Length: 262
Image: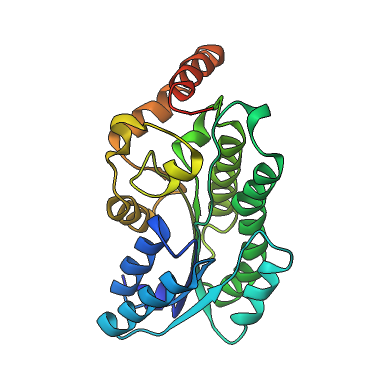
């Protein structure tokens, strides 16, 4: 497949300064797409953008913004008004773990904005153009946390369930239109996520690396409404559908309680 023809000429990646977002930048640059990097840390994005220009001969644009701030998505829309964005990667997000009452309310609210509201606003802006051109793609970063209640990680799990549902829903709505949608659900991955979320020990599930997760997502785009990365994660995501909900909550709660510092 010619990625630039199908999903180009420009792709926009939120949370592009590190982790999965930075890896999306690398792998999309290898496919020849021009790239818009959106995150807070301008220095990291500038360095990565320069590397991609020099290595792959693509064009880049860096937008340094806190996406939880008022008007942030409007700013992104203005800064890309002259570009044809054919692929939107709704990657930016973070988690908070611990007993619900111990967590900072504003940080929880900001997390919900970043994980849910921002993808809605950016998708609302870029999707109509894709539909009009009859080509394009959307990727929503969900999580294995989206498949069951997640005590001690409750709000985060709920935001990821939101991304799973909207990604799959848009796959169905726009199937046959030329626009593809995918919900990508990684398990624990070697990124900054566990440090920010205050998860002390992710155990064996942390073995996944950003390159294999992103590669799985890009391989799946246009082929399926959602994908869970990793065989163990696939088995667990399926098993919770047939287990009693209380048992699922008990198992998940016990596992997560032991991995948070609160």
